Image (cartoon, rainbow, N blue to C red; front, top):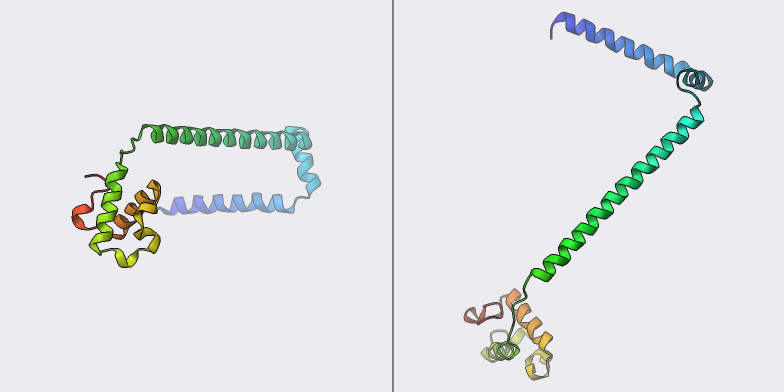
Length: 147
């Protein structure tokens, strides 16, 4: 920055300070009178600004709602398109019996889990998923429910 640029910058700073001081020293009545002279009724202007603000908020909220609705629709479409692999429940029960018989996970299971024949299909599948997540499935049986 050259010396001339610094002087011009300092001059602009002094001018800005003078404007701020002038505004701060003015009374509310003087500011309203000046506004009325150049722009019209201050109350009408304030009402117009409030209405503009409210329309802007409403428009923004509508855009957000549309984006959320599009997200929900995309999620529902994805859920319908994503195929769920078919699991043979007889194979799943046999797999659970093998794990229980192997003794590798026996200490971690409750008495109800050891009575596989009394479990519902969803309980059996849930238990196999849990065992897989815990790493309690034997390595040769850790195929995500598929043989």
